[in-house]
Each structure stands twice: as structure tokens, then as C-alpha cells.
Image (cartoon, rainbow, N blue to C red; front, top):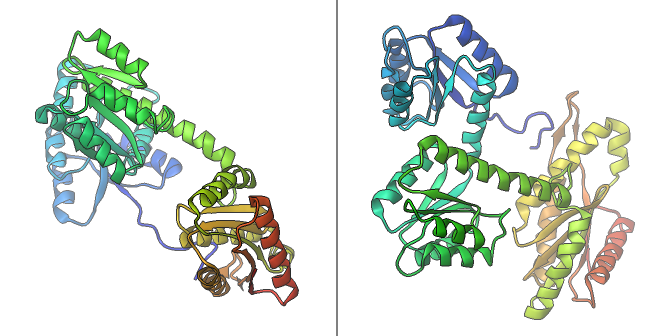
Length: 428
């Protein structure tokens, strides 16, 4: 059952806050309540935090800790919380270099100065960054097991999904299994395949705005740094001299550059309402999809789908409900087709699907199941009213001279489905 208000109850992520200043703690809780969906569990001492952690009642996504507490004046709470494998962000009023070095020695996510007017904004930014990092794959490539572990530990502290390889050849093999890797940290001198050679090979497959490559090498290798950048690396880090803060800043900045580029690309090729591809992308990528199928002599199916009597939904329930129905149908389509297929919103309540390796019999069965699945969806409006919709589908399974002809044929079959009573599949 689909529900236009709430399709499920998501579990809120919890943050452990340990802060003895009542005013500051309350302000932080209000800020997070206003700008995030995170639940704060507040302790005002090391003792209270121990009780909370020992209870086992909560699973914490991260912790925000005051460095100086009445019963833990020198950051003792950091050790306690990290022992529970919780990512730690430290709040401190001290800018003392000794305190800073001590904080970083605990392998924390970051530390934030309390006297900074933007500190609360930065805390929320860090938490959101950790959430994104959990969905982001990165790779460390280095033949030194010691330094490889150093980098892996740093990246895992920031919640990245981390893969590692001992040389460039092994790294390329991992890419075959994980083509969605977003960042590679690679050493220069390695057996089998050097970091520079690895960079060249990866750049043949991935643009700078698709994959971040950061070269790493020993101090004094200025020529190596230049070679990495000229051959496609986004950045370069010297092994012996980088500070933890610098490392995280470079990683985050480069990752966010790629994310912004991908967001701009998605805005240009995705339908803003359903999240499916738009008509422009359908024709641009669809032509390549069609040509590849012809070259490889594989079958290709083109289907046109339309929501039956959609105008009645808008007229009876309003355009907001109509939009929610379109979004839900978009989700159903995404769930029922492969990533190798192209699913697009053609316009209004009409959608187009391009799929390969389907014969006519298999295509009809697939789209009949889709039609039945949509038919049995029940939606609940904000007013508590229930409604359901049906779809009509036209399919072209014969490889025509071009993509436009296949879409035209599928659209003609869709018209026949509508004329034949709707809620049916018609294939050529």
C-alpha cells in the first residue's frame, strides 16, 4: 500500500551530545530540531554519558562532545565514546595547539571552536557530510601496508566506504567490481602499475567531474606532483608532511566538487518531479542505446505508458495529489527496471521505457506484471481519502530503422490500449 503522507516510519538518527553548559546545550538542540531530522540525546557529564552508553537503549550515528567537563576536564570523554565506535566531533573553547594536537590524536572527525558564530552551522554541515560519506565509496592504493592502513583509518573515521589495493593492477580489478567509486588516493611508486599509469588508465574511463584522483608521494617530489596533475589527478598530497585537518579538507573539497558537478548534470537530464530521466535525455541517450543494440544484434523493447483518466485525479483531488501519484509511479518504474534500461517521463502523465534483451513474450509478461502492480496500489490523500489508478501500455518489440519510429509505434499501440478500454497492454 502506497501512502501519500507516509510510506513508512524512518528511524531517526541519534546524536549523543555531552555538554555541561545548559544554555549552549539547549541552543544546540533547538538548532538541530529546526534544521535536521536528527534526535539529540543530551548528557551533561562524563558520568551521565557513561550511563547512557551502558544502557544500550540508543544507537548513535555520531557524538558531539565538550572537551572540558566538570568530571572530565582534559577530554577524557572522547576516549570513552570512541571506545563505542561512535564518530566523534569535539566542541572546545580552547585554541591551544596542545589541546588541538591532543584532540586529533584520538582520531576524531573534527573539532569546532565554541566562540565561532558559525560553529553550530558547521556542526550540522559535518553531520550531513558524514551521512553522505556513508554512501560514498573511496579507494586507497599503496604498496606500503603501514601507510595504506593510516589512510584507510582516516577515511573510515569520516564514515566512507573504503576499499584498498596494494598496486595499480589490483586497483583496476576492484574498479570492475565497484564502478561507483568516487575517489582514489594513489601512491606513485608501486609494483605492477605505478600511480601515474593508474591515473592515466582511470582517466580514459572517468572524467575529473566523475572521479576524484589524488596522487600521494614522498616529500620533495615536486616533479611527481606536477606529473600527477598533468595526467589527470585532481590534487596531490605529500605523505610525510600533511596534517590531518589538511587531509580531510582536501578530501571533502574534492568530493563536494564532484557531487556539485553530478548534481548539475542530474538537473539537466532528470525530471524534477519523478526523478526519472527527462525527454531530452531519452532521445540523447536513447539513440546510443538503439545503435548499440543494432550493432550487438540484441533485442530492444520500447514501451509507452500512460495513467488512465489522470485528469480526473487532478480535478477531483487537486494537482498536489496528482503530483504525488506521478512521483509514486516513478518509484514503481524505477523499482521494476534494470539500471541498464532507460526509464523516462515523456511528458505529463506519459512515460517511456527502453529495455534490451527482451523478446515479445517476455516483454508482454513484464509489462502485464507492472500494470497489475500499479492497479493494486492504494494511495491515501492528506484528507484520508483513498484512490487508485491504472495504466495503459503500448509496446514495440520490432527493431525499426530508428528510435523515433519505435517510439511512434509504441505510442500507436498505447492509443489502441486506450481505445480498447484502458488498463491493458497492447504489443506490436
